[in-house]
Length: 279
Ligand code: PAF
Image 1 (cartoon, rainbow, N blue to C red):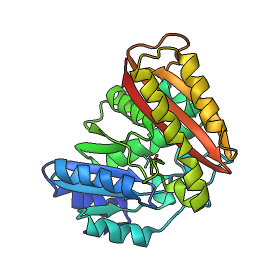
Image 2: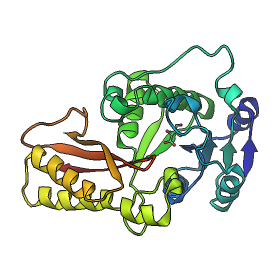
Image 3: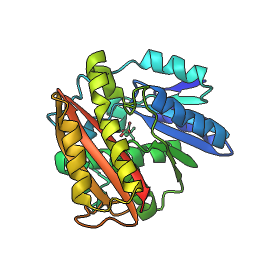
């Protein structure tokens, strides 16, 4: 496995790679969710490239940039074990040199859901992902459905800007108790992890109600709210029932493809989860 810490070295290597290249962009602290993306890429593509970069521009000032979990050595070992062809680990100054002055900003989907609580977040994500796509030049890129809005924003960016990359959505990977895998789960004590599984259980229960014929968005939001707030540590940031494509909130009768998503704080840790359903 090749390890690159310089853009120029990576590009030299890339010039000699032919066939399909699967790309898994990550912020490190790799867990089973990332590993499943790597497995999807390994299966679908001739070569898999993983980037490890904690992107500062996607953190809001009040967020956890300095304490974000980092363990590059462990990540690299894991990637070797998973037969990744190359790991790209750029530094801040490489991605954002002093005179850096360009951003990529998707302007419709980005302002909804996560965008309300985290206004600069998706601008940071699209800028770094566009830059990484230009450096890595993948044929395929793998994104988890846990970050449902991120997936849609990236798909829109690729469409709008004609990036020659196929975006491959990959299913949410969960801990045994149902909690969606996330690097941020590392902040949670064992007890809080157990409590946080209420997020998944509330979504599962509401999914069953929808499958059984519930069509009121008010009922759905009310049920999730009641269930999650039964856990005293949970503080709801948002509960959204939206059109899965446009992310426009649905207030009334539900039909078509719906994205039900939530963001919930457990102490300072913000956890997200979602499901989509066709009604
Ligand atoms: O999903 C993530 O880990 C990040 O948002 C990404 C796509 C690697 C961009 O920094």
